[in-house]
Amino acid sequence: MIQAVKGTKDILPDTVNNWYFFEGTFRKSSAKFGYRELRTPIFEKTEVFSRSIGDNTDIVNKEMYTFLDKSGESITLRPEMTAALVRSVLQNSMLHDQPLLRLWYFGPFFRYERPQKGRLRQFHQYGAECLGSAYPESDVEVILLANNIIASLGIPKYKLFLNSLGNEASRINYKDKLISFLKDNNEKLSYDSRMRLEANPLRILDSKDEGDLEVLAHAPVITDYLDHESRSHFETVKSFLSDSGIEYEIQPRLVRGLDYYSHTVFEFQSSYLGAQDSFGGGGRYDGLFEQLGSKRTPAVGFAFGVERLMLILEALNNTPEDYYKCDLYMINLSPEAYAISMKIAGDLRNKGMNVMLDLLKRSFKSQIREANKLGAKWTIIIGEDEINSGTAIVKNMNDGEQIHHEINDLVNLDFNTL
Ligand code: HAM
Image 1 (spheres, rainbow, N blue to C red):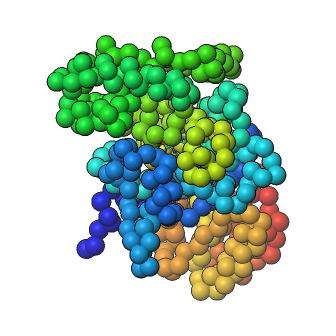
Image 2 (tube, rainbow, N blue to C red):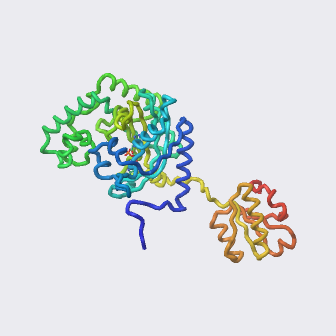
Image 3 (cartoon, protein in one colour):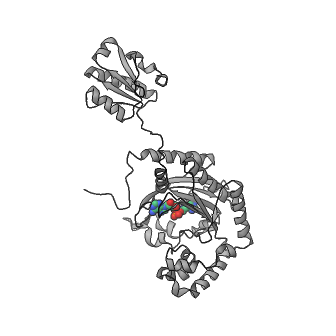
């Protein structure tokens, strides 16, 4: 039997309710904050990502699904959305007639990573991006939106880790200090970190290697090297978050795995998840527009990993309402009853009810069992006797109560009062 590609998952009818619940929540929360949805293709020219995420990041180096199409063009399945979204905003001149743009997205993303719980090769993200404002208030707005979604999904507790990478001047200053510190400790660093030392020293801060962690415990922290502008931006973000009742923890080594960030960076973590405990993250990326060939445009945003949110919901045993719940099951006990039932089912569906009927000409007992299995709230029973008398039996499946009702008038029955 042919199996699905490693690291990919079918979304089965059993779990699709969760997805509807998520998608509905994403739409509603985004609208509350004035964010509109953008949908872009799932593949882009490779340079969209290689020019923005950073040549020395794991995503670009190891994880992109890149191939040449039949015309020899290098194409990449999107590993994230921010770069693709900026490409689309520029191409469609979306910032030409308005100075501020609020966008959200949801869809599949692709990274060639080692699959494990919470880590897939095709996964889904919801994300939101606020484009055009350099003010810290916009950093706070996207975090409030993220918080609104987490609360609407019924996730009770999570950790928000916060850091600032400052502006470019602060980062250059810090990088010098960090490189010189790491060079002094070169022999204690892992091979990977030694390789990164010159090209991407900030990424070393993310290392999980025990030897690296011992060295890093004494490393200079970026928040000590922020210049006045960067410090004041960060202070405002923190104070607005506190005013809004959002708890956070400063994590001076938080750098995130993409190179486009400046100033605020943040990550959401949950103790309901295992090793892959980060269910979302984001930050400010004031330099990305320039990297993609446009004029400097400040921006900030975040993305959630939807499968990880789903794992949290499962751990909490939260099950959203069943979209496919059976309101009413028609039980037919004669060939003639089928024709009548189909007509009644059609009328009741037009009234908005989910109505199902037996297609296997099963016995009364089997049909009742099926109705119970489907969780039907009511059944309508029609056999020869009912057809002869012109009245059907309507049964409330919760309390077992039955009433007789005229077949021709079933469509006018108010089921909620039964
Ligand atoms: P990211 O941290 O690379 O950021 O991804 C965001 C979230 O996507 C992660 O926190 C995680 O929950 C989920 N995720 C990432 N890789 C996988 C995977 N292989 N399997 C399952 N879930 C995964 C970004 O992508 C940025 N574009 C976020 C952003 C938006 N920054 C600014 N705006």
